[in-house]
Length: 233
Ligand SMILES: N[C@@H](CCC(=O)N[C@@H](CS)C(=O)NCC(=O)O)C(=O)O
Image 1 (tube, rainbow, N blue to C red):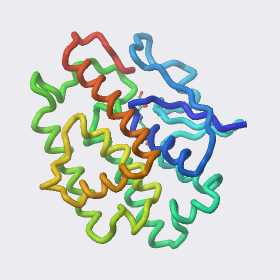
Image 2 (image 1 turned 135 degrees about the horizontal axis):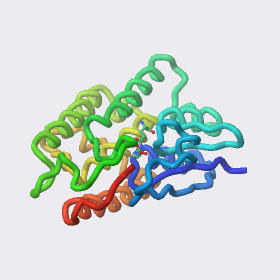
Image 3 (image 1 turned 30 degrees about the vertical axis):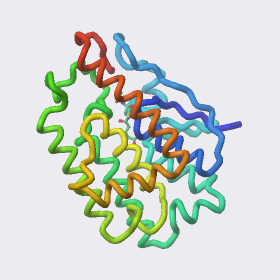
Image 4 (image 1 turned 90 degrees about the vertical axis):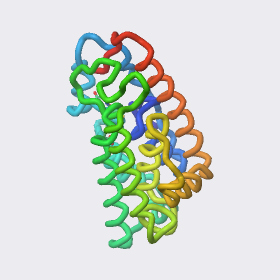
């Protein structure tokens, strides 16, 4: 039986897991969580699945695991086959660099709070947007994240080494999701722009991340143009 993945279309970490599954040819039973709008608090079922109440969540029989980075390491180790060597290299130092980038990606919530919303109710329009779009503080925070990627890409074409790894997949999902909020300036971050273009050449990355960007564009437009009745809980 295929593992079940709970996800959301606009969720960068959910997309990272979907891209990895595509690349290793793993069939997943994908289930969408509807969190728009939710008035009655976090459902008990959702908390039972994942005490952090976030997507993605992977279920394989009685085994339940959340946190996309942990899910990806599990899936690539179990189902990666020949591609595991490339996607999550066993050389200790290369693997440490992959992990470094994965943990950096996990820390990016602070740069992009709109997509990593805590379980408590938050109302749109979100506080870091004003009438004209994202505030200067948000843009500066996102530029800081781009700056870290730019510096990390100094030695290699991909984030940890010379080829695609799971760290590129996770980070790409986050960086692509930042585009509708604050576009990457290729003059300021040329290596990151080249890396992003390189990733777009991977069909699974392109397919999932263009859909994610479209949905996020819609959410942001909604957030900026409606009265604050929508809640993410
Ligand atoms: N570090 C976590 C982040 C997960 C996360 O924050 N997911 C968001 C969607 S992108 C979510 O489920 N938010 C709803 C909530 O916190 O209730 C991961 O990589 O899985």
